[in-house]
Amino acid sequence: MSPIPLYKWLFNRRRFLQLSLFASTLGLSLACSDNQAQSSPQKVLVIGAGIAGLAAARELQSKGFQVTVLEGRDRIGGRIHTSRTLGFPVDLGASWIHGITGNPIATLAREWQIPIVPTDFDNIILYNSQGNPISDRDFETSYALYEQIRDRAASIAENSEQDLSIAEALQQVLATQTLTPQQAQLIEWGLNSEFVTEFGADLESLSSWYADEAEDLDGGDYLFPQGYDQIITGLANDLEIQLQQTVTEIRYTDSGVSVTTEGETWTADAAIVTLPLGVLKSGSIQFFPELPRNKQGAINRLSMGVLNKVVLKFPEQFWPQDYHVLGYLHENAPDFSEFLNGSLYSQQSALIAFIGGSFARQIEQLSEGEIREGVLRVLRRSYADRIPEPESMIVTRWSQDPFAFGSYSHIAVGGDSGDRDILAEPIGDRLFFAGEATSRDYPATVHGAYLSGIREAKRLLKR
Image (cartoon, rainbow, N blue to C red; front, side, top):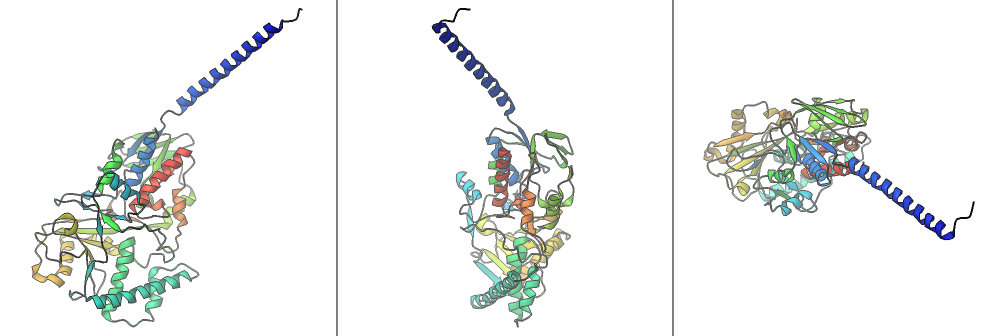
């Protein structure tokens, strides 16, 4: 066989390289086409149209995912619920932005030009058990004593070998104190305002180790005079939301999820569960397979508090105009002890009573007439016959709400903040969990719920 001329060998060599390059390019193109087919918008179900669910859905949809939000109620917002039935906006659930510095809710309000106004909780008029205003001097002296007792109790709890309830830690301090009746009542009022109303739980159940677990944001507390639902409406824009889809069953496998509602069955590649802790604790939704033992244990150990409101609209204002808060001491607590001056935000003659813990659960068993008379009985101590009959009233009953079974989560005695992390852990690459109860840094807050939704959307994206 005669040798191949050098120029032909070079030609064939170049031809071979061209064909090889073409083949590799073709393979790459086919692989890219296959990858593009694989990365076509994946389907994700978000269970719950509260702020955590809407935040997650919005984040995922912006990244090209096909997202459907399933909501059992006939409205969006979850525990953010603005009512206008009294002729002006009233937030029956979440009310405040707690700290506007670095708060994503405040950022959204600015971006969407939603007005917010501050609440000064120190701007308060406090009435004694006879209905007379307490002097500034008496208030300052008694409140300084309250802070001293509270801080000593916190120190006892911190140095205890076992978790104590706040009530147990306080009892050790109070046993050494001699208090006047008014001092004792003011201390009880302060504890109710700072803990019972704040956490929606009684002192006997609150963990003293974890009462201050949350991180605080600076900048004060701000209300939405036109309603918190403006934030909800903005987040829900352009999302696919299916209302009145009460979830009864969630199935998950290595290949996807199936969610059954009272109406139909929905399938997707993954799901983000943003159900309130109260719903998870109720067992009204079945998981197949059952949730991992450690996750179910965290659900069992975490507790759901209750904060209720009584909103009264009067034909005229009979209380001082400039105070943000009206407080009442009581000889026999619990009773209605804290009112927000709604006229500062609504241009209406309105008072909003805040009630937490077991007392909040008790009033849910009363009729509206009984509740109205209970509130007026307290107010009449100060204003007697000057109080007109209220024109209208709203009473919340959050512990009876089947889509919440409470207001927000807290850690009871014997619990641990690590339970929030366990609750937040995904199951494989298919089932993710968000909501205020999964937020270790900002539990029981709107911004905590919002950030948890963003967190899980990003976690799903990585997986």
